[in-house]
Image 1 (tube, helix red, strand yellow):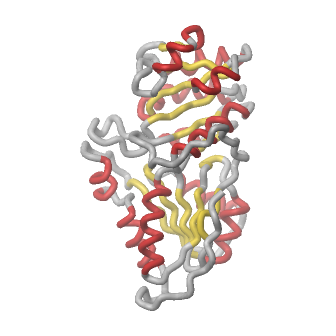
Image 2: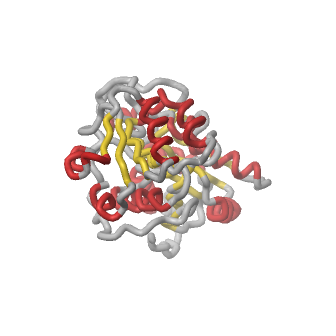
Image 3: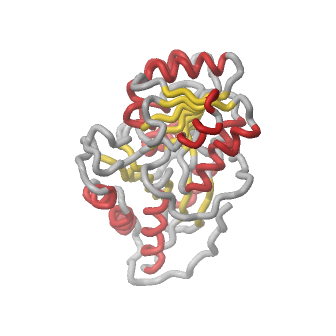
Length: 314
């Protein structure tokens, strides 16, 4: 925000009584005339941002996922109908940890992807988050970037982050035994599971979807046709989530003869507790991905196969 604030004079920040939690304190000091804390009034924050965007500003609405739910109507009616270029920086997406069931951000994919004109992104790491932010700044329409609570994984951040083509996923590995499609920080749990699968002679393809809407249907369909066995992974409720979006897309494109397993949060509220323990208890960590993948493949896990060539990440 600070870096782009110097080069994009129309970039403004709006939050609802959470400037420290969303990391906007520095921006508010450097650009005090372009920072607005509206208090605990998420609905007003969104409608106010739509008004700013209608007059040429590029508002970034930084709000925790669970609290953005309060502004569903304003996102739909005030931002999306007129396709105003408002950026929703959705903090604390997924399992939040020790703040209780009211704070987990497990519903945002579902309540946003039904809205026309909305682009929804979720980064695998801090560098991809930077790239998605640049993508959103350059996009002339509503965008949402959903990222988790906690520290980044420690990757180097590009000095000049490159935008990502809207709807473009990333093929991380190419294999032949099954296809795993993960979104957001679930990529990191999936990479741990893939390493364990490789040790057992099982080599899946792995797609970092990047986008919940629009999906990279060409990339996904190409690899679904090759393997017929798909696992989707998300730190989000299953009902209406990322896995549902993938399944709907495949059906809409008349893709047949495949089997899809969805890994995500079942139809329940997640309780209080440390993130790592909750991910394990609610079946969205690498142990669950490994278990589901082993149950899915036909070949015996004790007979290693020739390892296919990895496709380097972008």
